[in-house]
Image 1 (tube, rainbow, N blue to C red):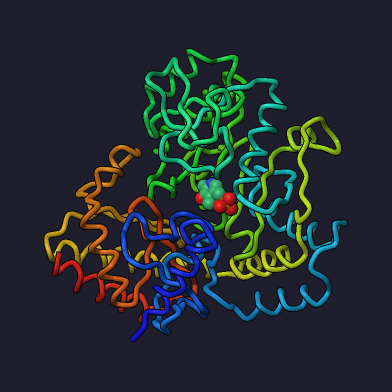
Image 2: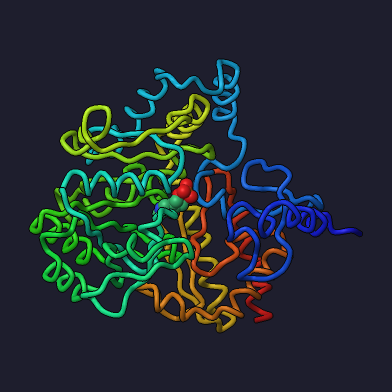
Length: 431
Ligand SMILES: *Cc1c(COP(=O)(O)O)cnc(C)c1O
């Protein structure tokens, strides 16, 4: 039988660099032929050969209701008939802003944009504009989109700033970006001592989904908040992945349970709030958000920002996930998956650790959960690739890289979870 995925990949590579429009899709880390997806429904999608997979990528997070949820589909179809894009304001943008703000009380106002990259990039511009400072702190292994100033890895020491991780990013552009180790309190203290009055913001993923699944310790988050306040810097939580994914109030609501009164200054959102359409946002208190054009001096704009079809999709999605019982059911499914995987790995003597929250999970082929990027990267990569392909051959699609999180949707049934654990059990047995 001809492999239609392979022929599409060959054709794609003629006209699209690497055959893909986002690098991880090319399966470079795990090897093999990327699956070209032809359609999806509920927790499944089908590739060009007609092979079905249980989907644990969910478009890297947005598809929290699974694919083709009837209420979302209806809202999108109705909006599409009314018009694709106007370049003028609509009532639905207000409705989506109100819905987002009602669940995330740290924000008084929100601006809608089209991608997480754009939202994170603008949040930094806003933080710099609002504080009149230039330097920013980020953590190794956290991803905040591909804006120039964020494509940076740690320099040789804390007094030095980072080095670009991409060609085309001049050293000057990242010279104000300081890259620290996640969950490292001593480095955090030292960075604020060294650069105190120059730091505009500290940006972090509260649960780092771009190193699979690494939680900020509560004590670390507490100290990030205290040091920002003490030194006049803004705490920016990038919740593009965790927002409306780990809890209805996003990850910040979990930290607020442990740290009463806790809130970030700026929140960055994306993925779930668009329900699979290009939509992202950033928001914060009124005084900060009013620094944005047209009210203030910080410029930002977008032809498709607040797009009417995307906002309809996001609104319908948020409405579903706010229904009573939604989070208990989703969390239970995710827990069942993680517990089943752990038990199976243990049975077969495979070193394995895993964690989850809401509809997001991560696992490592390591005996203990890692707390920072360098320990994530100690994961057994050849073994992960065997696991990935073993699952794929058995109709289970997880992220094709060991540093990426996984996602369960409300469409995943108990049977889907059991089938996944059975597939993993067979692969663990062969590892
Ligand atoms: C996905 C992601 C981004 C980038 O969002 P895009 O929509 O892909 O540009 C930024 N930050 C985090 C935490 C993400 O997970």
